[in-house]
Length: 277
Image (cartoon, rainbow, N blue to C red; front, side, top):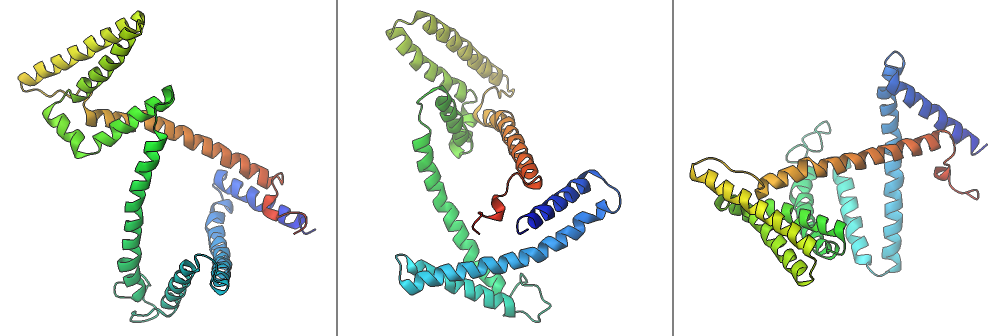
Protein backbone atom coordinates (compact mmCIF):
# COMPACT_ATOMS: atom_id res chain seq x y z
CA UNK A 1 0.00 0.00 0.00
CA UNK A 2 2.90 2.36 0.69
CA UNK A 3 3.84 2.14 -2.98
CA UNK A 4 0.43 1.74 -4.61
CA UNK A 5 -0.96 5.02 -3.27
CA UNK A 6 1.94 7.23 -4.55
CA UNK A 7 1.78 5.44 -7.91
CA UNK A 8 -1.96 6.08 -8.13
CA UNK A 9 -1.53 9.76 -7.23
CA UNK A 10 1.24 10.12 -9.82
CA UNK A 11 -0.91 8.49 -12.51
CA UNK A 12 -3.98 10.64 -11.78
CA UNK A 13 -2.06 13.92 -11.61
CA UNK A 14 -0.07 13.06 -14.73
CA UNK A 15 -3.19 12.27 -16.73
CA UNK A 16 -4.86 15.48 -15.53
CA UNK A 17 -1.86 17.52 -16.66
CA UNK A 18 -1.95 15.82 -20.06
CA UNK A 19 -5.63 16.55 -20.48
CA UNK A 20 -5.11 20.14 -19.36
CA UNK A 21 -2.58 20.65 -22.15
CA UNK A 22 -4.79 19.25 -24.92
CA UNK A 23 -8.37 20.06 -23.79
CA UNK A 24 -9.01 23.84 -23.69
CA UNK A 25 -12.43 23.52 -22.04
CA UNK A 26 -13.68 23.75 -18.44
CA UNK A 27 -12.64 22.52 -15.99
CA UNK A 28 -9.30 21.57 -17.59
CA UNK A 29 -8.45 25.11 -18.71
CA UNK A 30 -8.41 26.24 -15.04
CA UNK A 31 -6.44 23.29 -13.67
CA UNK A 32 -3.01 24.72 -14.53
CA UNK A 33 -3.56 27.83 -12.41
CA UNK A 34 -4.90 25.84 -9.46
CA UNK A 35 -2.12 23.27 -9.62
CA UNK A 36 0.47 26.05 -9.79
CA UNK A 37 -0.76 27.35 -6.42
CA UNK A 38 -0.58 23.80 -5.06
CA UNK A 39 2.96 23.37 -6.35
CA UNK A 40 3.95 26.64 -4.66
CA UNK A 41 2.70 25.28 -1.32
CA UNK A 42 4.66 22.07 -1.84
CA UNK A 43 7.73 24.11 -2.82
CA UNK A 44 7.60 25.90 0.56
CA UNK A 45 7.93 22.57 2.38
CA UNK A 46 10.68 21.54 -0.06
CA UNK A 47 12.59 24.72 0.79
CA UNK A 48 12.21 24.00 4.50
CA UNK A 49 13.50 20.45 4.06
CA UNK A 50 16.34 21.68 1.84
CA UNK A 51 17.34 24.38 4.30
CA UNK A 52 17.22 21.92 7.19
CA UNK A 53 19.37 19.46 5.32
CA UNK A 54 21.86 22.22 4.46
CA UNK A 55 22.11 23.26 8.11
CA UNK A 56 22.46 19.65 9.27
CA UNK A 57 25.31 18.87 6.88
CA UNK A 58 27.35 22.04 7.41
CA UNK A 59 26.88 22.19 11.18
CA UNK A 60 28.11 18.60 11.31
CA UNK A 61 31.16 19.62 9.27
CA UNK A 62 31.86 22.48 11.68
CA UNK A 63 31.31 20.35 14.80
CA UNK A 64 33.67 17.58 13.61
CA UNK A 65 36.23 20.10 12.27
CA UNK A 66 36.46 18.21 9.00
CA UNK A 67 38.83 19.54 6.29
CA UNK A 68 37.25 22.62 4.74
CA UNK A 69 35.00 23.34 7.74
CA UNK A 70 35.81 27.04 7.35
CA UNK A 71 33.80 27.12 4.12
CA UNK A 72 30.90 25.52 5.96
CA UNK A 73 31.17 28.23 8.62
CA UNK A 74 31.00 30.99 6.00
CA UNK A 75 28.02 29.24 4.38
CA UNK A 76 26.14 29.07 7.68
CA UNK A 77 26.86 32.68 8.55
CA UNK A 78 25.61 33.83 5.17
CA UNK A 79 22.58 31.52 5.34
CA UNK A 80 21.41 32.68 8.77
CA UNK A 81 22.17 36.33 8.01
CA UNK A 82 20.02 36.33 4.87
CA UNK A 83 17.33 34.29 6.66
CA UNK A 84 17.05 36.79 9.52
CA UNK A 85 17.25 39.82 7.22
CA UNK A 86 14.55 38.38 4.98
CA UNK A 87 12.20 37.27 7.75
CA UNK A 88 12.33 40.52 9.74
CA UNK A 89 12.75 42.82 6.70
CA UNK A 90 15.51 44.98 8.17
CA UNK A 91 15.70 48.36 6.50
CA UNK A 92 12.11 48.27 5.23
CA UNK A 93 9.60 50.90 6.23
CA UNK A 94 6.96 48.26 6.94
CA UNK A 95 6.36 44.53 6.65
CA UNK A 96 4.24 45.18 3.56
CA UNK A 97 7.25 46.58 1.69
CA UNK A 98 8.77 44.00 -0.73
CA UNK A 99 12.14 42.52 0.13
CA UNK A 100 13.70 43.71 -3.13
CA UNK A 101 12.81 47.35 -2.46
CA UNK A 102 15.69 49.82 -2.58
CA UNK A 103 17.20 50.47 0.84
CA UNK A 104 16.38 47.18 2.51
CA UNK A 105 19.23 45.11 3.89
CA UNK A 106 18.20 42.26 1.61
CA UNK A 107 18.51 44.54 -1.44
CA UNK A 108 21.84 45.96 -0.25
CA UNK A 109 23.25 42.48 0.33
CA UNK A 110 22.12 41.36 -3.11
CA UNK A 111 23.36 44.47 -4.88
CA UNK A 112 26.72 44.92 -3.17
CA UNK A 113 27.66 41.36 -2.12
CA UNK A 114 25.96 38.73 -4.24
CA UNK A 115 26.20 40.46 -7.63
CA UNK A 116 29.93 41.32 -7.31
CA UNK A 117 30.64 37.75 -6.17
CA UNK A 118 28.72 36.35 -9.15
CA UNK A 119 30.62 38.62 -11.52
CA UNK A 120 33.89 37.48 -9.99
CA UNK A 121 32.99 33.81 -10.34
CA UNK A 122 31.93 34.22 -13.97
CA UNK A 123 35.10 36.14 -14.78
CA UNK A 124 37.16 33.28 -13.33
CA UNK A 125 35.11 30.77 -15.32
CA UNK A 126 36.32 32.41 -18.52
CA UNK A 127 39.88 31.24 -17.79
CA UNK A 128 38.70 27.72 -16.93
CA UNK A 129 36.69 27.58 -20.18
CA UNK A 130 39.71 28.76 -22.16
CA UNK A 131 41.91 26.13 -20.50
CA UNK A 132 39.34 23.37 -21.09
CA UNK A 133 38.91 24.48 -24.72
CA UNK A 134 42.66 24.30 -25.29
CA UNK A 135 42.69 20.71 -24.04
CA UNK A 136 39.51 19.67 -25.84
CA UNK A 137 39.96 21.41 -29.21
CA UNK A 138 42.79 19.33 -30.61
CA UNK A 139 42.76 18.28 -34.23
CA UNK A 140 42.90 14.54 -33.49
CA UNK A 141 40.36 13.63 -36.18
CA UNK A 142 38.15 15.22 -38.80
CA UNK A 143 35.33 16.17 -36.41
CA UNK A 144 37.72 17.71 -33.90
CA UNK A 145 39.37 19.70 -36.70
CA UNK A 146 36.02 21.11 -37.85
CA UNK A 147 35.17 22.00 -34.25
CA UNK A 148 38.55 23.67 -33.78
CA UNK A 149 38.22 25.77 -36.95
CA UNK A 150 34.64 26.81 -36.09
CA UNK A 151 35.58 27.71 -32.50
CA UNK A 152 38.62 29.70 -33.62
CA UNK A 153 36.55 31.56 -36.21
CA UNK A 154 33.85 32.47 -33.68
CA UNK A 155 36.39 33.56 -31.08
CA UNK A 156 38.15 35.68 -33.67
CA UNK A 157 34.90 37.14 -34.99
CA UNK A 158 33.69 38.14 -31.51
CA UNK A 159 36.82 40.14 -30.73
CA UNK A 160 38.07 43.52 -31.88
CA UNK A 161 40.85 41.83 -33.87
CA UNK A 162 38.39 40.04 -36.14
CA UNK A 163 36.42 43.24 -36.73
CA UNK A 164 39.59 45.22 -37.41
CA UNK A 165 40.81 42.63 -39.93
CA UNK A 166 37.50 42.84 -41.73
CA UNK A 167 37.50 46.64 -41.75
CA UNK A 168 40.93 46.95 -43.29
CA UNK A 169 41.05 43.70 -45.28
CA UNK A 170 37.54 42.63 -46.32
CA UNK A 171 38.85 39.38 -47.83
CA UNK A 172 40.98 38.54 -44.79
CA UNK A 173 39.27 35.23 -44.11
CA UNK A 174 39.71 34.13 -47.70
CA UNK A 175 43.40 34.99 -47.51
CA UNK A 176 43.69 33.06 -44.24
CA UNK A 177 41.89 30.09 -45.79
CA UNK A 178 44.15 30.21 -48.84
CA UNK A 179 47.23 30.23 -46.61
CA UNK A 180 45.95 27.24 -44.65
CA UNK A 181 45.15 25.31 -47.83
CA UNK A 182 48.54 26.18 -49.30
CA UNK A 183 50.23 24.78 -46.18
CA UNK A 184 48.22 21.56 -46.51
CA UNK A 185 48.94 21.40 -50.26
CA UNK A 186 52.68 21.61 -49.53
CA UNK A 187 52.42 18.49 -47.41
CA UNK A 188 50.44 16.77 -50.17
CA UNK A 189 53.14 17.68 -52.70
CA UNK A 190 55.92 16.31 -50.49
CA UNK A 191 54.04 13.06 -49.92
CA UNK A 192 53.33 12.80 -53.68
CA UNK A 193 49.57 12.68 -53.25
CA UNK A 194 49.00 14.35 -56.59
CA UNK A 195 45.21 14.08 -56.79
CA UNK A 196 44.71 15.82 -53.45
CA UNK A 197 47.43 18.34 -54.32
CA UNK A 198 45.78 19.29 -57.62
CA UNK A 199 42.36 19.52 -55.96
CA UNK A 200 43.67 21.86 -53.28
CA UNK A 201 45.45 23.98 -55.88
CA UNK A 202 42.19 24.42 -57.80
CA UNK A 203 40.38 25.43 -54.59
CA UNK A 204 43.15 27.91 -53.73
CA UNK A 205 42.93 29.46 -57.19
CA UNK A 206 39.15 29.83 -56.90
CA UNK A 207 39.39 31.37 -53.43
CA UNK A 208 42.11 33.81 -54.45
CA UNK A 209 40.13 34.75 -57.55
CA UNK A 210 37.15 35.57 -55.38
CA UNK A 211 39.38 37.67 -53.14
CA UNK A 212 40.82 39.61 -56.08
CA UNK A 213 37.29 40.12 -57.36
CA UNK A 214 36.29 41.49 -53.96
CA UNK A 215 39.11 44.02 -53.95
CA UNK A 216 38.16 45.07 -57.48
CA UNK A 217 34.64 45.70 -56.19
CA UNK A 218 36.06 47.84 -53.39
CA UNK A 219 37.92 49.98 -55.92
CA UNK A 220 34.59 51.27 -57.20
CA UNK A 221 33.41 52.05 -53.65
CA UNK A 222 31.03 49.12 -53.29
CA UNK A 223 30.64 46.73 -50.39
CA UNK A 224 32.19 43.28 -50.45
CA UNK A 225 31.18 41.01 -47.58
CA UNK A 226 31.87 37.61 -49.06
CA UNK A 227 33.38 35.32 -46.39
CA UNK A 228 34.43 38.12 -44.09
CA UNK A 229 34.94 37.05 -40.49
CA UNK A 230 31.85 38.69 -38.86
CA UNK A 231 29.53 37.54 -41.66
CA UNK A 232 30.89 34.00 -41.42
CA UNK A 233 30.44 34.03 -37.63
CA UNK A 234 26.83 35.14 -38.04
CA UNK A 235 26.25 32.36 -40.57
CA UNK A 236 27.76 29.75 -38.22
CA UNK A 237 25.58 30.94 -35.33
CA UNK A 238 22.37 31.17 -37.39
CA UNK A 239 22.65 28.03 -39.52
CA UNK A 240 24.84 25.13 -38.23
CA UNK A 241 24.74 26.12 -34.56
CA UNK A 242 21.00 26.76 -34.57
CA UNK A 243 20.35 23.50 -36.42
CA UNK A 244 22.42 21.54 -33.90
CA UNK A 245 20.76 23.32 -31.01
CA UNK A 246 17.30 22.45 -32.34
CA UNK A 247 18.31 18.82 -32.81
CA UNK A 248 19.56 18.69 -29.20
CA UNK A 249 16.33 20.29 -27.94
CA UNK A 250 14.25 17.77 -29.90
CA UNK A 251 16.28 14.95 -28.34
CA UNK A 252 15.80 16.44 -24.86
CA UNK A 253 12.05 16.78 -25.43
CA UNK A 254 11.80 13.17 -26.58
CA UNK A 255 13.72 12.08 -23.48
CA UNK A 256 11.40 14.12 -21.23
CA UNK A 257 8.32 12.60 -22.91
CA UNK A 258 9.72 9.10 -22.53
CA UNK A 259 10.63 9.55 -18.86
CA UNK A 260 7.28 11.22 -18.11
CA UNK A 261 5.36 8.33 -19.61
CA UNK A 262 7.47 5.85 -17.64
CA UNK A 263 6.71 7.71 -14.40
CA UNK A 264 2.99 8.13 -15.14
CA UNK A 265 2.55 4.48 -16.07
CA UNK A 266 4.53 3.31 -13.05
CA UNK A 267 7.41 1.78 -15.00
CA UNK A 268 9.96 4.15 -13.43
CA UNK A 269 9.75 3.97 -9.63
CA UNK A 270 13.13 5.30 -8.51
CA UNK A 271 11.49 8.37 -6.97
CA UNK A 272 9.81 6.06 -4.43
CA UNK A 273 13.17 4.88 -3.06
CA UNK A 274 14.34 1.32 -2.60
CA UNK A 275 12.32 -1.59 -1.24
CA UNK A 276 14.02 -1.22 2.15
CA UNK A 277 13.03 2.45 2.58
